[in-house]
Image 1 (cartoon, rainbow, N blue to C red):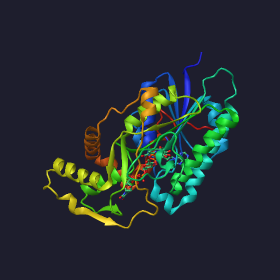
Image 2 (spheres, rainbow, N blue to C red):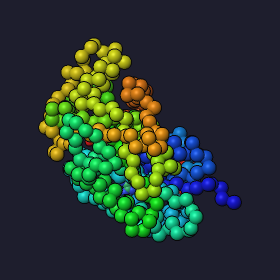
Image 3 (cartoon, rainbow, N blue to C red):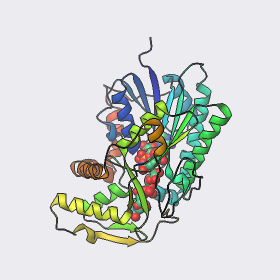
Image 4 (spheres, rainbow, N blue to C red):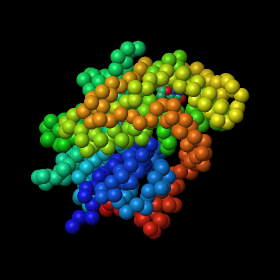
Length: 363
Ligand code: NAD
Ligand code: DAU
């Protein structure tokens, strides 16, 4: 008798979205074994999962999705029957600095995972599923009107977006060619706890708290469509279980903000919470040189996932942003450890030495 109903491999589970996804599946589905494969780049932080790391149905494996030998061992050892693939290089500015690592992780890593899933998933009647977690940036930029839909053409602009678009194409190719049971989701900008402070919202919260400059790219009129990470995770759960094989679903909260308006809102809310004078933090705003190839606007038409799978976001932006600001205010130790680099010791000092839940070697 198998101890678990199924075994899910979540890649990149120590990252921002990945850690929320791991926590969600480990706590909501005690009859699933969740294997988190992450090679702990600068963005991978096991402290994000400290509350669930000793759960019986959770295993962490340190390793790269580009390592075919390791992937074969993991699939065989744990008899993986589902994949939720979040591992990626995810920051646009870093892709402009160093595109090659984006190709290695996002393109080659995705190809390696697909190949090993294809090799391993051969038993008839099993409920296999490869869910590729992607971004709306694959569609390029919108003008002031219109929305991305599942019919939008691919038109990626940054090396990050192009690497994610390539991964999406590979996922579809493995479905069309080998009948691999895949599903794809493309989501808009996420915000919430545990986001690495290189992305707009946590970086600006940190800088407002520390009274540092707020560097706004270009005019600040670029538009992003913000969704709370927990709403994204709930959409992923529904798509993983109920999405049609070979299909894609767009996820977004119909919540568009010009960067500069969002930045003013952050300044006002944090000043109020800290009892600072009205307008104090807005003095920190500096307009700087624009991001190269900066996409003007992203906006999602999420009607397909609402209509077909019954998903809609639960957080209003007002609630979600206030809770997010409170989380960063209450977790200044987390932010300090991320900023100083101390979080990188967590794996060495904690995971390996923690006898109650030893580090799983895939070898
Ligand atoms: P993140 O940068 O916070 O985390 C990425 C994780 O992947 C880290 O834990 C890192 O260690 C791991 N990783 C990187 N390279 C790896 C490798 N070779 N092998 C194993 N693990 C590796 O990313 P995020 O913001 O949480 O995004 C997660 C996924 O969701 C990405 O695929 C991204 O494209 C997509 N996405 C993100 C957003 C967003 O707003 N953040 C929106 C839509 C889609
Ligand atoms: O749309 C989904 C994408 O959202 C994800 O695929 C990416 O992984 C994620 O990083 C995010 O990409 P963006 O480039 O939109 O996010 P970022 O937080 O880097 O920037 C948001 C906006 O804020 C963008 O218009 C650039 C601007 N910005 C960002 C930073 C970090 C600034 O003006 N100043 C900054 O310092």
